[in-house]
Figure (cartoon, rainbow, N blue to C red):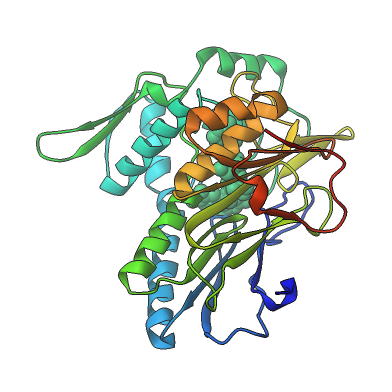
Length: 360
Ligand code: FAD
Ligand code: MG
């Protein structure tokens, strides 16, 4: 079957602050040959363009999409790293050394993020929100241009905020209470919450009997079932340029999550400073420019993709193994592609084949 006859999805990354590109998100392109109608929804939430699609009875699907939209808006408020909401209230408490009772949803999220951080050797480290603020990535519009002072970065790195500093206790009365022994912990779920939202959305659709569906949160994508009786056809955005570098077919319940450094970055003095920070140095990770993970659990895939960008071209295999993600493709700053043996048969390069492709 030719590619044009399939349903084509582009996984692109969220907001390009540095490039001044807003809403250059993912798109769900229409399929001329499709017979099963797809109910769709597009919205702007989590700072990125969101696309939802579900096959099935249109009224039922639209109702489920409404519910997801409402829930996403609540998640956006509750889990926002710099706007008023539950997470911001918690961060304020932790900074003052106070504990705080949180919702069950946030407690589950923090436990999941803590497990992923531990598995990644703290390369995925959502406790480093102060560093993200210092680099001015916790903002819609950047306020500062020059990189932060080396002393400021060094001071935060020395205090080593990490998720193992965070305690999440279940009290006898069932309340979930969060505390931190490190006042420099500031939780930023930008590398994780969208994955949690993906899992929730597909669970919700399945509970409503909608088993063929897609959810794309700005390059964090998850699918269920099939599209029109065939696999979903997914494109991985080219990190250098506008098009797609590779196509991947997926069916069943799978997340295809890409983390990249090419859309959200700042520029100063001719140099790019992307938004994924290496917790060891406090500096932006620059060597791996794109990491794609296919995994059943979208939240885990989201955390892993971020960790693999940090791990770099030398370290990604070890981190993937530690995190138990077998299907990985990374692209380095020179355009070289590294893949695991498990993902390689699923990847079809689109356009010119990359200069170097290594399967390990
Ligand atoms: P990922 O690699 O999955 O995540 C990278 C992000 O995680 C970074 O941007 C940073 O926030 C954080 N991070 C950096 N280094 C690490 C590390 N080593 N370990 C763990 N985490 C790290 N953006 C806006 O511009 N405006 C908004 O209003 C806005 N609202 C948001 C609301 C919510 C609830 C969430 C979760 C995010 C929001 N964002 C917003 C941020 C934005 O959508 C994403 O965080 C950003 O696009 C990066 O996500 P990603 O999937 O591309 O990359
Ligand atoms: Mg991530």
